[in-house]
Image 1 (spheres, rainbow, N blue to C red):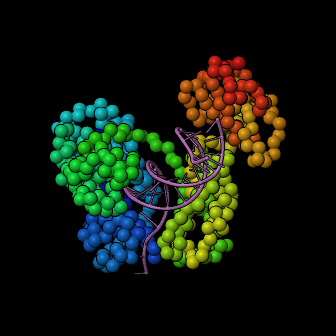
Image 2 (image 1 turned 60 degrees about the horizontal axis):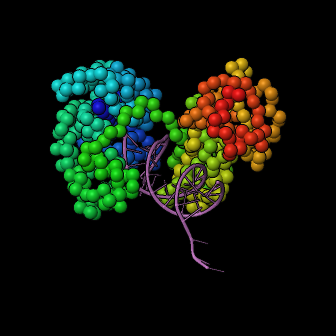
Image 3 (image 1 turned 45 degrees about the vertical axis):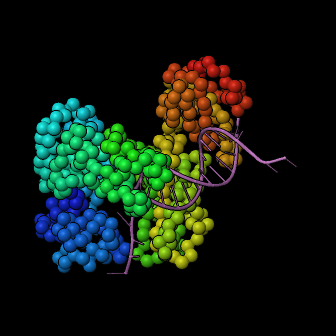
Length: 441
DNA sequence: TCTGGGGTCCTAGGACCC
DNA sequence: TCTGGGGTCCTAGGACCC
């Protein structure tokens, strides 16, 4: 496994594009009164500027002559894509973790996995990245798992290369601070410190039961394994998005519900557009708000059908805001949609085609009060396109116009058949479906 | 002039169902 | 005459990551 982490990425792109910034402290992030630092160049880090620090604090620490920049995300994305392209030459299994970070499964790329060979590969990769990006450097870690590769890339930043030889994992891991492990943030670190755990070695001495009691079932079991360098997490090249959201911190706290309503409309517009651009829609609309005193809460509502409609998203978010109230003022609002499915409202079913798969319908949500035209006899639904789940020959098909139509097939969906419209009381839709029913009939 | 924005995953309680 | 045992879905919050 290889892990690549580009060094002070946003600041490095700025220094590449603007020679006058080279060798000078550069801070990229929010430049408004409530901004925070996204990336500080290594020159700025020398003065104590750090990611996630308020920009005001970074201004205090850095000398005059420091460049404070708002960021040019299109440029970062282009540069990132160049780098990801180089990684994909190494292996079909590349998992971008963020715009400046990725894992590569070298085994899947058919490489010689000897220490000497992967060391050479890492060196060569760094040279090619610098050449292709005009001087952006990256730190590379290579090891037997995601855990070891990631730790390797952190050990010699910037411009580092660390190969962890197989068998050397625990020797490297155990002296390190527990906070080196992914998933150990401030809260977990504090609790671990209270029971005397400072290093990964200390962690490895704890029982599974102790860690589960301390950090919860999933997290505790994860820590127990990582402390032993047990990590079989696979590289997942194409993760599907699970939610889409937009949020904004205001320069000054807002109280006026009319003003806040317009902010919601604008955010719902962005979210709806992004959903539409990616052909997703979602059922759960979430409003996030942060009050004047930084208390943060979320309110959500789940719809019977997925939506990507900005007006519908905004209407729900506005109502959630009205219920939550804006007393004292809000410093942040956010609008999000989750529970996503690949689903085009109507469009998938609008085209007529004569491959004539089988289908059946049942209205499941009469309270939706969707005006309900009789189902046209020539309507075609496409199991192959819209099956959301396939297992043991069972599947669910989505229709339009009648609300959500959920049909359960007790048979393979592979054989097309003629369209059938079943009444709600059709025996085929009853719980006692004959187990050998084939929807080819 | 403290404390961004975009996400993921997990937990827990309550409603509801069989 | 005092309370099952699964399971799913929804909501809310929290920890964490980059």
